[in-house]
Image (cartoon, rainbow, N blue to C red; front, side, top):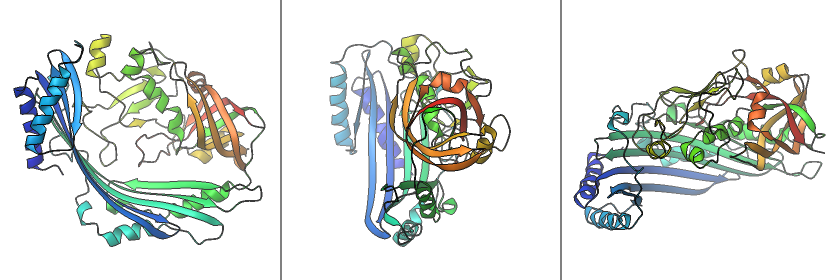
Length: 442
C-alpha cells in the first residue's frame, strides 16, 4: 500500500510545481512489488524480485503542456527535476486544448484504495517456499511426449495515487497472483512440434489454484497432433473465449478519441448509429468488485462509469479524454473501456460446445498466429489454429490457415455469444460465433 509518507511526497511535487510556475499540475505516484519464480522442465530456473516506485508529473505552464517521470524520489532531486521540466515545457508550442478535467468529472470515491475489493492483505506473508510450491505444483514435465516446459509464477502488489491542483485525490490498490505455462511436444507423425499455453490468475491467494495449468496445456498440445489446413472457403466461425477479444478490442480502439480525431478509425461518425446487429451489446463494467481490472478512475482522475458502449447494435459511447474533448468540440467521457463485457446471446448458458452445435459445421478458432488489422478500414487478416467441426462435433485440428474480412461485415454475420468468459481476464468476452467467414487454406 502507498503510505502517508509517499502521499506527502506526491503533495510535495504538486506544491513545488505550482510554486515554480505551473498554473496547474497532476501528480501520479505508482508503486509495485513483484516476486517471480520461473521454471524450466520441472525445476526452478530463476527467482526474481522487483520493487519499483515512480512519479509522473503532468505540467500546464503558460498554455503549454508536458509530462515527465522519474524514480528518484527524494525531495531535493524532485525539486530540481520539476524545475527543469517546467523550463522544458516553456520551450514548447502553446496548445490551448490542454487542461485538467472539470472538477465535477473527477472521482471522489477512491479513498482507501480497496473500494474494488481486489487487495489481498496477505500478499506480504507469502513465503519463498510457498512460491516455489506454486511454481512447481503445476508441472507435468516427465509425462510422455513433452520436449520442454516453461512456467512462471508471480505475485504482485500494485498501487497508484493520483492528485491534481483542482483537488483530485484518488488511490487504487490491487494484487495479482498469476501462473502461466507453455509446453512443447516431441515431433508428431507429420514432423510438427506442437505447443500450447495455459494460465490462470486471481487477486487473492485463497482463490488462486494453478495446479491444473500444466495438465490443461498438455491436453491442448496433444489435441493439435496431426493438424493441417482445410480447403479454402467460407465457414461458420466459432471463436473460443480465450481469444475472442481479437474481434472486440479493435472496435474499442476505433471508438477512442485519438483514433477518431486522426481519422484513423473505421467507426468515425458512428455515435448513435446502428452499425452492428441487434444481438450485440458491449458494456463497460469497471466496477465489478473482486475482479482484476476494476477501477474507479482513469489516468486523469476522471470517474469511470458502468455504461453501454454498444447497445442492441447501436454505438452509444466514444472514449474521449479532456484533451480530445476540447480539440474535437464534443463531450468528454472516461478515456477507455476498462472492463469490456459482452452479454450472452441469444440464449442463456451457451458455451463453445453448445454454440458449435448451434452452428452445425464450421471452424473453431482457438489461437492466432500473426496477422494484422487496418484501423482505418476495419479490414483484418489473421493466421489461425483450431479445429474443424461437423454436426457440432470436433473432427480434426486445423492450422496454417488465414481468416480475412472486415469487422463490420463480420459482425453483420453474428450468430451467438456464450456466457463462458474467463473472469480472470481484463476483457470479459465469451465464445463468439459468426456466419460465412472467409478462410484461406489448402
